[in-house]
Length: 214
Ligand SMILES: Cc1cc2nc3c(=O)[nH]c(=O)nc-3n(C[C@H](O)[C@H](O)[C@H](O)COP(=O)(O)O)c2cc1C
Image (cartoon, rainbow, N blue to C red):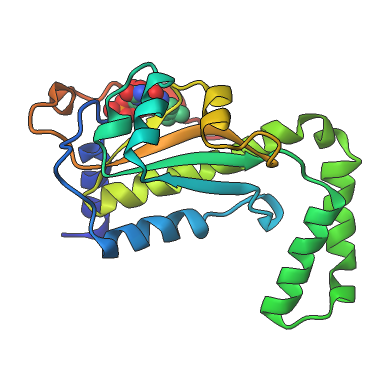
């Protein structure tokens, strides 16, 4: 199969699962790749303003389900990942990131001063400072996209989930005053044979409606 067919088949095969097979679990090897898809996601300036909380505890999952419109995916999926974003993007966080670049790439911190100033000028002193939480959330959604596509390529099912109460999640996950806030979640695992949604045709705009060539 060509790479194009492989990817397009996976994209068409993927759908937002409504009912998972609660008995099937993702293998350790696949889970490692899924985690890498999150870790290696791109982000603005490479700042990675995210933390991914993997909820294994069944009691906690039950409580989260109650504040997720009672969606069964929360408790029935194999792996449930809550996507959180960094509430505060400050000078210290940016400096920590510069130190990491210097360490990983073996460069002098002084060489990164211009880069650091540009980031600070944009995110802390520039117009983006006013929408910094939205900016951070946007980065998290890129990671979500990487996770969903990687899962599909591995033949693993998923549900992106915004149908939840972020404030209630923060409380249940002990995130209040932690600097991290819930924005969404992704349920991962295997579709139930009786999930009728897997037979639905994809509803998408036609190519001509959403692409423009200038
Ligand atoms: C950010 C986001 C949040 C979503 N939240 C939910 C959700 O809470 N529950 C659910 O069943 N589906 C959820 N969906 C799935 C969408 O309804 C679904 O992706 C869309 O209808 C297209 O269908 P398909 O993904 O099956 O092709 C969400 C999708 C996205 C991208």
